[in-house]
Amino acid sequence: MIAGSLRRGPGTPADWLGPLPVRDWFDDPSRPLEIDVGCGKGRFLLARAGKNPDVNFLGIDRMLRRIRKIDNRARRLDLNNIRLVRMEAYYAVTYWIPAGAVRTYYVFFPDPWPKARHERHRLFNPLFLDALHRTLEPGGAVHVATDHAPYFEQLSEIFADDARFSAIEPFVPGEDEQTDFERYYIGQKTIGRLSVRKA
Ligand SMILES: C[S@@+](CC[C@H](N)C(=O)[O-])C[C@H]1O[C@@H](n2cnc3c(N)ncnc32)[C@H](O)[C@@H]1O
Image (cartoon, rainbow, N blue to C red):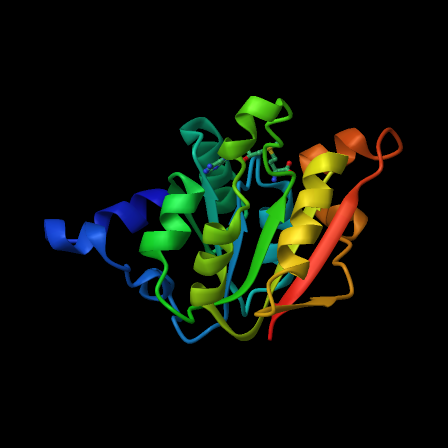
């Protein structure tokens, strides 16, 4: 959980700059690691972790309030396989996550930054794909969903242009795992889903 992770946090300033032993934050570091990027209020993360006790889950979000709420719920549900960090996701994946450490990334409803002049703030770009590729284990997957059609088009293009990833059947969560944003948009908007595997 957040407090435990921080207590066992890096000891020297040099540790902050390089990859951190993220897998060691869990009781059993040998279990596969899956990361929910921009985990929001944690509906997916909590449900997924509850159903998969043999998998370690890391939630990343920049909003401390959301991270704290998920931490409280995880404790109440006695979910020992969740850890949380409050951090900017691009920074975390690029600098913090060790190479080949991650089996699966979930990125559901990333902020779309709909105005043309703000597009550069979007999480997905070729540099973020470099970071995903570096940190995924061989055969590891990335699952993305968005309600924003232009962002979905852009995502589809940048993954199609990158031979390091191959498209797989899109991941569709069960009702119990739908995120808050998915539940909000369902029936109102088309949800674009894209899943890829590290080739
Ligand atoms: C639109 S919400 C989606 C939340 C959740 N995935 C869902 O589907 O309900 C986007 C979430 O990502 C977080 N977020 C956006 N950009 C981020 C970034 N660069 N780094 C970390 N978190 C980010 C926001 O704080 C917010 O909780």
